[in-house]
Length: 212
Image (cartoon, rainbow, N blue to C red; front, side, top):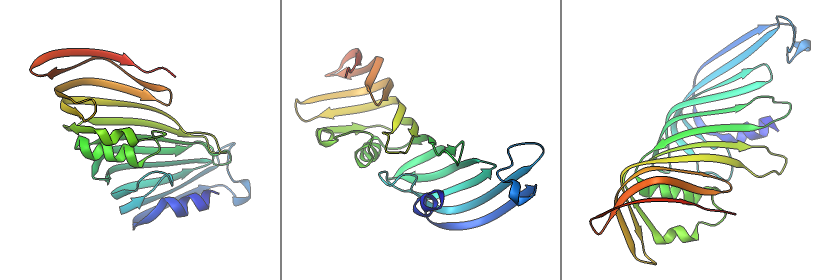
């Protein structure tokens, strides 16, 4: 299963470096006890990477992949997803014998392109209503994703930080400018407190939370 996942995830790229540390007999793998040690690291450039088949690909990524005993870790410092810049990304499987994938992402870029990332991902069960939404600005999106596998649903925690953003709704017609603040969300809903902006030149501050 791990090999299948790696074959799907690592779409393209150039391996630039590799290192192996082995202090043990191979029959003792995965070296959980004593002073036995196993570490295998690969570095790649210009990588096209898809950590989950339901998500868009990361492109132009520089990343490092490390196997450390039973653990798998990956870290990337550059790249793009649907035109949005990747500031930082880490992925880990703490125990390869019981795979559970944790992914942490920090993204920043034009709000319209970030909205396209949300539409193209499985973050929302239905994104049709987003066709009525227009966004401006360059927000920062932090995502923590947990994939338990075994046909269990993904879990997530997210945060969007906005400075001088804009929002347009087609129906009902609404335009909000100079939006600033923070919005949080998870698989259960969305919430914000103290989100500020201007409507028709008037300052407004809002708080809201979804339920169910």
